[in-house]
Image (tube, rainbow, N blue to C red; front, top):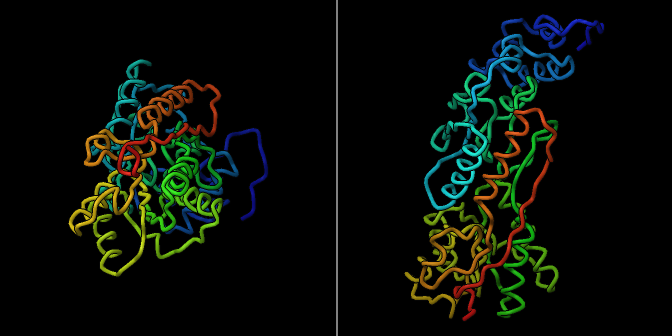
Length: 340
């Protein structure tokens, strides 16, 4: 691509089309995000938009003059033990700053079927949970200067989007160290989250670091998916037991998977913590009411929602913000790990 000669005038859609080697109609489809465009072509268009610092006229008018006093939240789902505290934090922070909240869920939609129902046309900024929006749309929003804050995911390369998350690696390290140091466990299985999930990846790093500190060799056979799902975790633990895998403890990537693991162990006639010790992650409200109560890593989920919303409001007001905020996690000891 040959870059047009610089001028004092703002870049036009024609400049973008010329630089990307496509038609104006193609640029329009990429910018609007309403019609499919071949990924390679869309990438060329987005590179041209960034290089020329092009702002579509409609978007420029919206960003300059339209204030909806509304924030958007894009998440896989809003039900369940994990999302409820986060939503409380978001709602509280939005209300305190005078903003309404619109929520869009994506859990049961394939990426190619997702519609961008929230954006610059009906909100002043977006909170985006991990994996809930495609790269092309995120790139488009950044190209027009639209405020976005990530929940539990770092920005893809080339995008400068703030993130609020928790200390996953440190929390996992604390959990596994406790099993090793206090309960002499040596065969600790890890129930990982969904493939590609950033939280799960950091938690596995913490798991491995703890093993390394205590000179315990890493065994890949002890790492299988729990998918942050009680059903999937129960299936995985059942397969471990049926296959004769030897383990004395389970570090679960989240508390829901720990619930499934405890159920599978119970069905197999095994006791927690006498036979197998378990530690979860998140400290959802249900954790303390399980039998036995679940030792887990407390993650300040509600605070993540609140702080992310505060960041977004500051972005909407064109204030400078931190690009990454890591909230501390801590070990909450109950009885499932063997402590009394």
